Structures are given as structure tokens and as C-alpha cells.
Image (cartoon, rainbow, N blue to C red; front, side, top):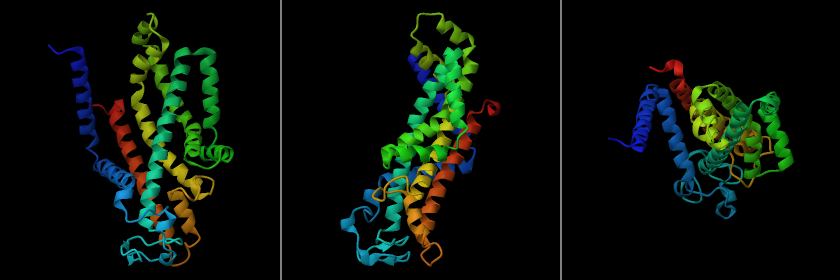
Length: 301
């Protein structure tokens, strides 16, 4: 006879197989997932994939500035997407910038998820004044545009990867808190929660071992969307010149650097980073939309 642990493992494996079976029904979502995996692999493997470290000044040659796409530079390799005003290979700079985007998006999304879960679960579980106070703060924050709040926080914290991540966490955790609170409020009145609260179990065990697993599905959808939002917000802040410093790779900085040449014949400086940013954000959103469709109880077979 199977042990309880083995039964739980088999149950999880079955749920994963069912999830993947439903997910792959959308060819667009599958292609989007492949695109995300390929871009992530290329960006994190950029030091071994691309021909140049575009942020190592010793490796740059100013004579290679503004080379058109497909031109062979002084280093002996072809600049497939051309070079910028500093002689940086654009393909290399884009993949380095994508790596920063993924790091910031995933880090900010994960931290905002944890903060939002704690706030939402606490509000739903304790109720009363605690719920009123926490959710009024969340509602106040949700009434403000995320980009405006992020701009204010970055202006206060300064430039840098850690500062951007902190600003994005503060700007985005409210979405997770609101979703967690809504799902946890429904679960709070059910018998299994009442039974758990009537035992001498620690509050944290009731919250994270009994309540949290039952509110995770909608949070997974929100997390997917917020990762894409964080990537877009970071690029926006860097484009405006208040995000990452020029010494840090960023798609927003690359787009901003090439924007002044957009009306010349050097349009590749801004267009190619913008295309990669658009593809990344759209692909993540398409995957998130299919995840939402699969996890929606109304679509369950």
C-alpha cells in the first residue's frame, strides 16, 4: 500500500501532467514559452555566446562606432545587429540587457509575491481592524499608477539594480496582496480552516500550510503578469534616465541611447532593443494568459 508521502507525490505529478496537457493545447502559448526559455538561456549565457562584453571598455574600439548591421568590425567578427556610438556590438548589448531584465523581473516578482502573500493572508485571517488597516493601505497604493510610484521611489533610493528591485517590490506587492486577500477570504470560512483554528496549531502553520496552498492558483497567474510588468517598468525607468546607470546593461538605456538617432539612417540603435523587449514582454503575457485559462475553475473538464 502506498504511503501518504508517495500518494502526495503521485498526486502532484498527476496535477503537473494535467496542467501541461491543458497548457499545450494553445500552440501560441507553447511557442511563447519556448521563446522565453531561449531568450533566458541566451541572456544568462551571454558571456559564452556573444562575441563581446559590451560593458568592458577595454574591449571596445571607437573605430567600430555606428557600423551597420552585418558589417565585419575590427575584431574580425560580424556585427549582426550593428554597433552603437561607442562601438558596442548591439546583439551582445541586447543579451546583456535581457539578462538584467530577467534578473530584475524575477527578483522583484518573487519578493513582491512574498510580501503580498503575507499582507493578504494576514488581512483575511485576522479580519477586523487588521484587515481594514492593511487593505486600505493596499487600496490607496492601487489607486496610484505603478510607474509614478516607481519614479518617486527611485528618485529617493537612487540608481542601481538593488534600488530598482526594491522600488518595483513596493510598487507591485499590492496586486498580490489584493489577489491573496480575495482568495483567502473565501477559504477562511470553510470547515478545514475552522477545524485548524480550533486546534493548538501555530498561526503561521495555519496560514502557510493550510490556507496558502488553496490560494496559490490565482497568484501564479498574477506573478506571471507582474514579471512582465516589472521588466517593462525597469526598461521605462532606464529609458527616462532614472533607472540603471549607463554602466549597467539595460534594454531601456539602449533604446534611450538610440532614440536620438531614430530619424537618421541609424534606426537599428533603438529599434532592435525595442523589438527584443516587446517580444519578451508579449511572450510572458501570452504564457500568463494561458496559465490563467488552464487554472480557471470554470474551464476545468
